[in-house]
Amino acid sequence: MGGSKQKRVFSSRDNVSSTVQGESISLAAALIAQNQSDNAAIAHGLKRQDPELLDHLIELYQHRLLRYLLFLTGKREVAEDLFQETWMRVLLRGGQYNGKARFDTWLFTIARNLVIDLSRKRTMASLDEMREGWDDERPFEIAMEGPSPLEQFQSRENSAEVGEVLLKLEPTYREVLVLRFYEELSLEEIAGVTGAPLSTVKSRLYRGLAALRPEMEQIRAVPPLAEVAI
Image (tube, one colour):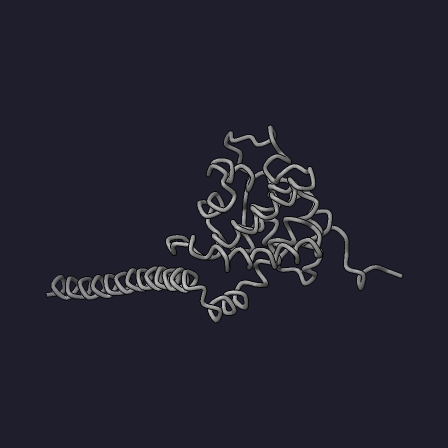
């Protein structure tokens, strides 16, 4: 009898676990379906050059886009000019967006290409050419116990210092860190934006974090002004 009762209890728990797991899978599937539906709606609206949709997209993505351009160029006036040009491209070439990828990755790709075009016009190297011959696709990983240096530093109050530290890094390292930790893109999506192989994206991420660590440690070693004895 005891064994029978235990068997029934186990069966009940198993059913609950299966139900919860099933609900989680259903929720994930619903979210994916919703995102795909949203992307499809954006693609349809851009093909019709819907002005209301464009206004909505600008309102939704303006902060992220400008931040990305600021980190790529390091100059606000240049970033603001490219910000306007990016949205002009979205309006004029919206029909090229098919809704299969996330809209933000397509948007960042347009912005990145404009940065590269501007760099070439100014006889400067493109983002990739700045480090031509430097990318090493051999496996390279750093010990990561707990949050990354960037994630640790983002918890600090002075966000301006974060930008200053990132701007000290090589452009390709900086770009991958911004896309990964600010924009929360997957490595595959970053590869799509940058046009770099996945192995190169991984290498840039690891090496960027490695270059970032001493800069972060140096700043953390300096006490806030309130703690400095006068």
